[in-house]
Length: 443
Image: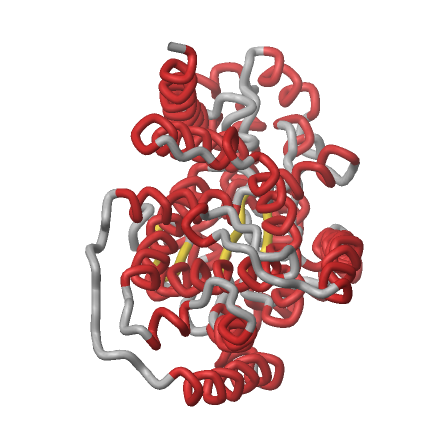
């Protein structure tokens, strides 16, 4: 009876966590609004793992806990690695992040640890449901594909380095072509081998799992205070949630890339694998096992260095209380609002008719304008004050400016006021202007 109850409990508790999280995020309830990502993704992971356990007696968390922990670790390392790439590409930045300190540090690892387990559990569910069914074609020549694959991978890796504005999407596929030959040669799970045998089902399932996971990521991101904003070139207009429409095509490739990268890691572990159907012993030398052990501290070093760089270059604003946002206008009035239970700027704006009765008339307009600016893409009070210093006090006024002119004006203002510690980027100003014109989740 206990084995039957346990997976059902996981399914119900995971689903409940997801539903409560989105309800809390939409209604500005702490901690769900502040930390939507953690609750939404770990809730989904528990739900999916429980469902697989209940229906097919397959559980990553309870039946393969060592592999689950391994996935959590390399998931965080992999994503910190991609954050290093973003220092060069500058395709996204973070807002509403926790203030620097121990919790902020820990939360980054906890967040990033969900990437691989989340995507791969979606993939396993699709596999169990046989979506899609068997897709068979004529096999492709394996040896030729290996040689061509390495060349394509090198080109895809070099082009974003040289021309990041034009070839940044290649980052989400380069390591597929670079690492697949390694997996195929040493008999690790290999997509190239699948293609050689004319089998396309696994690749299509991975692509679909990436697309579904990407949609869920962006849904979580849209409702959360702590979120990321995209600044990819040429696509500032037209988004679903925060992602440019074409950007969703990157998620399928990202899932395949992560699958290949983790297969290369498992190759060094003697063929151990999170997917029971792919786990098979592989002879490894002492040199390879030693290499794996060395990769663990190297991975941690990469993660730590990446985190420190992110704090300066990628994190643009931190979570702020209502009193912090309004302290230079009227701290006493702001404290009054806080004592009455108003915690967030967006919450105040949505209930403005009720809130304004608690604010003295002279402060109502400055309060509302500051909250509207600070809440625009969660840019925070420092950026809002910077805009105010050059005469921009509302979103409507912001939409009238050109990015080039505004970039120069804001940089000059910041040289005098020192409101930002990191350099202001024109791409982020473009995102502010586009966000000020936005009216819905789909535009």
